[in-house]
Image 1 (cartoon, rainbow, N blue to C red):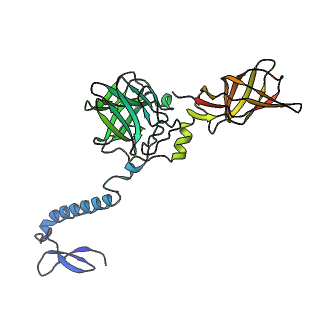
Image 2 (image 1 turned 180 degrees about the horizontal axis):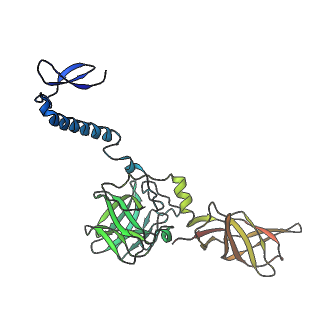
Image 3 (image 1 turned 180 degrees about the vertical axis):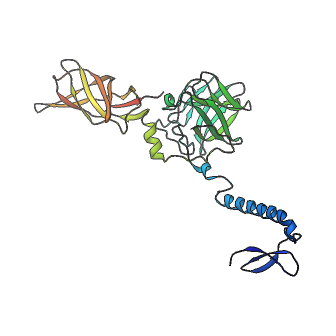
Length: 331
């Protein structure tokens, strides 16, 4: 049986009649004459509005609309500091450079950055600053767009900074001890001023959000983060790579495989200059490596040009035995 309002013929009052029987509705109990029809209508409209609000709220989770949970793209790589990619294996850094992948550390004095206790920690002496920054790979796409930079910092909660990306002006928000910054370039910064801070995560979203309506942070899987990071940096590659000598020059060309296409032509560091092992007409030959340069980037690897101590002959083939190198295309 549906619930409805029925006027009691004896009392003249309206009663709410449903599956459980009739009960007096206090809101309408004083409405008993046709002249009060408008009041009855208003009361019913009020109750319908309240019921509609209940239905609307039932569609929400923790009081938030569904759109709140639609996850926008985070344009920052390696943003989950509880388990960051760290191909360099650096746990503490105290001068300009990279510790964890994709985040550059800088300071104007006595400071360091480390990864401990499930966070990135910046420790700065009084009167100095220290920060970590990143230039997103899609900075050209983001240029001129309204974005939100956010970070979860222990003791401060979620901080946000709204700005137009790469607009040329510097902008920051904070309390003097910790701040989020955009220097009008392609980089975003988390900076500590004479203080020690611990950062749990960071995000850069297209669109304008506040700490109240910012979508919940969702980290990528470690494997997905690693692949993103390897577009910009790959450590200790080149061992057992085949190649060939070029002409009469002491040049050995080898296509070193990479797991992903690198962001741009990388700088190459020769970590271990081991020998090239050749076999020419049944005769083994060992040739030294003295330097390396990049020739070109390909979908399946990076072509490198190694300088050797001798040349066994044009197009002679060989293998980089234990030669190790690092590719860096950081921006």
